[in-house]
Length: 490
Image 1: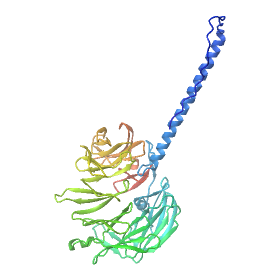
Image 2: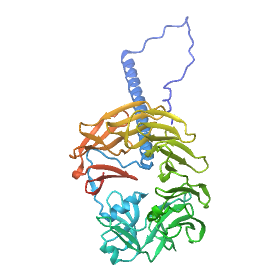
Image 3: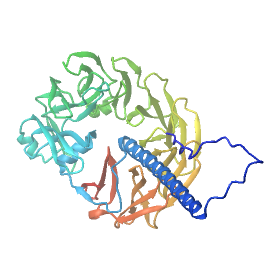
Image 4: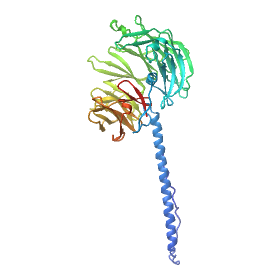
C-alpha cells in the first residue's frame, strides 16, 4: 500500500516585474501576523491529517498481519503475562483435543463417555463448552468398566475442495484393547466397525458405511483408507469411496517375520496431499497414491512414517547399513529426497523461507527440500521443535531459545535460561516465542515470552496451577502436569 502525498497548498502563479511602476506598499504588520498564523494552523492540520493517515495504515497493516498469523496453523491465540487456565479438559475431552481437528474456533473428535458410548463432539476452544454432540455408538458396559476413555477408533479431517463444507471421517468401533499396569492385555473383539463422515459445522452425518475389522483410518480427497490387520494372515489395506464405502483398491503390505508377528495388527496409516503412508512400525513403510498405486515400495531398514502436516509431506524414517538415521522426504509429483539425520519438525511455518527442511543430529542443518542440498549448518543442539516466522528459525535448545537466519543459519540471538532450567516446546502467538522453562531438579516451571526480534524477555510468570510443560495443538496453548493433567491456557 502506498501513501498519497498531501496536496500542494498553492499553485505556481505568473508574476510580472514592473521596474517603472510605483512601489508596492508592504502589508500591515497585523495582517501579516494573521496570515502567518493561518499558514501555521493550516500546515499543522495537514501534518495531523498525514500522521493520522500514516497511523491508520500502520494499524491496518498490523491487523492484517495479526489476522494472517492467527490463521497460520500452529499459532496460538494471544497470550500475555496474565496467562491462566481457561478450562481443564476431562479425559474424554483430552482425547478429542489429541485428534487435532481444528475448525472455526472449535476442536473436534471422537469422544467416549463414562457409560462407554461414543459421539462426535465439538468443543469451544475458549471455554470447553460443547457446541454440538452427534451420538455414534450406544452405551457399552465393558468399555465403561475398562476406565479407558480413549476411543478404539479416531476422527481425521477430510481434504475437500475450496468452498466445500469441511468434513471429518471417524472410525467407530465397539472393540478395544486395554493394557493393565503390568502390561496385561485385555482385548474385546469388535462386532461392529464403521466409517462415519460428518459435517464439522453442525455435526450432521453425511455418510455411514460398514468397515468390518478396521483398526486404522486415513483420508485423502474422496477416499477413506482403512486397515484390517490379521495375525494369522496378511493385513489388508483398502481404499473406499468416502460416501458409498465402495472398495476402489486393495493393498497388502509386506508381512512381518515370525518374530514380529505380534506386531502385525499395529498398522499405521497417514494421508496427506493425495499420498497414503502404510507402515508396520519397525518393519515396513510403503507409500501409495490415492488410486492405490505403489509409489515407493518398502526398503530394508525402513522403520516408520512421520507426517509433516505443516509442510504437507510424508517423511520416511530408516536406518542405513552403518546404523545412522535417514529421513526421506516424499511429496506428490516430486522425486524422493534423502537427508541424513532426523527431521526436526516445524510446528509453525509462515512460508517465509521456502523449501527449508531441518534435521537434528548433534547439530542443526538446513536443507533444500526440493534438491536435498545442504543450505547451512548451525552448531546448536535442538531439544524440541522449531518455528519459522518472518525469515527466522526459532529453535529450543538445552541452553536456551535461539533465533537463526533462515537463509544462512547465522545466529541472530540467544536467550539463555535461568540456571538449573531448560526450555521446552516452543509456541508462538505471532508476537512472542513462549516456552516453559522447566527446572531440571523438578521444581516449579515458569512460562516465559521472548521477543521475536531480539530475544529480550517480555514477561516471565510462574506456571499456572503448578503445571510443568507447555505445548500446542492447533491454535490451543496447553499446559501439562507430571501426572498427565492437561489444561487449556490463555
